[in-house]
Length: 320
Image (cartoon, rainbow, N blue to C red; front, side, top):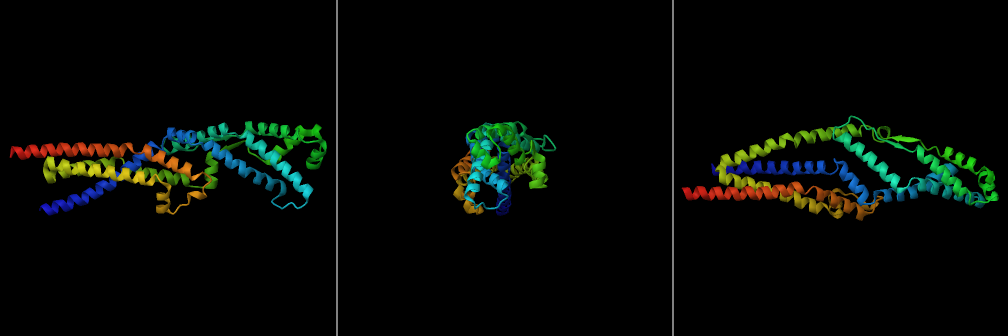
């Protein structure tokens, strides 16, 4: 009979540990990627606007060049020099207008909107990135850049002298075809249709599995431990299981804080990302550090329950 109890409790312990690890991961997600403050901290503390601005600075010249040449190579030296001058002028005007402070505002706007949707506080994405104010700034930057060219250079590049700089700048901005605004919901629907609904479905499953259901497993396991081994020994078993669950999760987060460990498990190549691997590792470590409160509670709570159970067990032994 004792062996049967041990087998049953061992199986229940495995279920409890699995549920406990899932519960802590779920709570960790709720305290990190499902909160607006987490994203704001990551954006500001790890220089995300600077990284995005740097990527734009590398990407925009190629886009501008393709737009000017239609993607065709330019072999004539004079024409190539003219194209190079236009590319540098337009690219600098755009990247100067889309500065880091503006990028930070838009990233915070978008992440806040996504988090609000995922938390069920809103049914649709509502964020709109307003670019209309930046179009005039880009035009002004282009006009300032054109002032550095002579009449001969402007005639060679644009077929008009310096007196027409405002008209040239306006024409260039018009040819860029930049939208006045970007609607986040439209972008998601175009680039990854159905993604939001899929994520919401997963979150609904997690809410059900690791919400009330976890506490049902928690209470049932606690009651069975005490029924099988009486209160003292049952609390010891339950306390050890709880502390073990917290310890496994804590050790796992410490291990996965290293990118090399994640790469070994997933096969992902973080060196291929546009973000420096050191920054990615810092963000991962920061994220896991925010998830460590719950496993520590499990460890401390499990230890307390074990001590209480031990005291009750000894008291019962002495009474007998």
